[in-house]
Image (cartoon, rainbow, N blue to C red; front, side):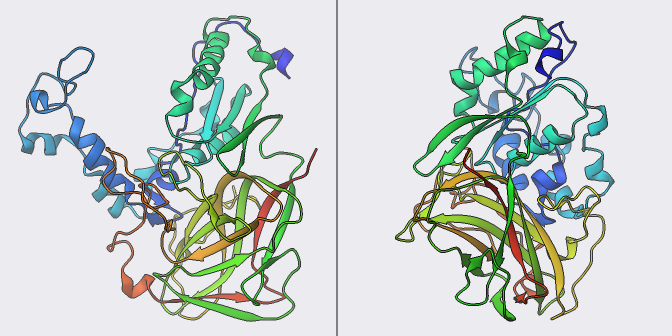
Length: 424
């Protein structure tokens, strides 16, 4: 309880603001699929400021001095001094000792925590914030979730004041009322870049009505009722796949929390990649997207899974599948397997008249409008920011461009599990 929190100075407290916690699952391999971000990030944001560039590197706008040190090393020496992270990620395809050495032991994280996530940072940051908040051993921990760009809330008064209040309370012992800070502070998303603050006591929210929306064979729809007939929907691996859509909402519908997708899938080859995208459409079927942490056209929610990585860990929950990524289980061509796909936690209030949809694709989501551009990103962003999955060594066409088939039947009914939040 808040009244039990001591304001006596602590030796340490941490504020992971749009952080990451698992270098394999959050950064290098989404659902077992290699992410392009590592190689592009290293090329654009690590190599360009490496220590040893000296005068060849950028200068500080504040001091006018080289930010990469006074020493100048040759290109060969610079190369020798840095790890080829992209090559390591391509080599270590499973969650092996390489990645586990870089994974926190949550049982040892006991200091006060203020974890701040961004709904729109799906390719890197929010998963770690939610995992850290729920799994860390600390008894003094808080969660805050916001939207828009990666930097806005951090540098403006909204974030600065929260951070300062948290650190002042725990590191300086100031009695500033942090003990009355809500355990969970959410900025609930609405279309039009509108966010409404709401305080909660826990995560996921206790009042959640976990609701299954079943995939239907007729016209690719979603329904709260399981399918009455059996059917199949097939698509090529490197395609936009299939989209399942709810009818227009009669009332506003809030979705806030973690999401899971259950599929029964087969492939004409020995593997398949599934890109699951939660989407919202206006009454005239224009897609609702948001300014994400980086990409200006970010969809409501995204998740990924390589079928051969489908083995579940004991950490799994119905609403948050957790995969071991320690064993490859190749598919037998045209034989069904059961898949549980994690979609990164999200929040959206779907207005009356709007439609909620689930797209199951064989490649990255692509926003049909103009691409976003940032100077420190290697390529224009088309909906996923820099978190794309296009490496031909990881996704050879002979395996991943086969024919994928979603199997639907009354006994094996695929669904998306959504965290529906009732009106208070």
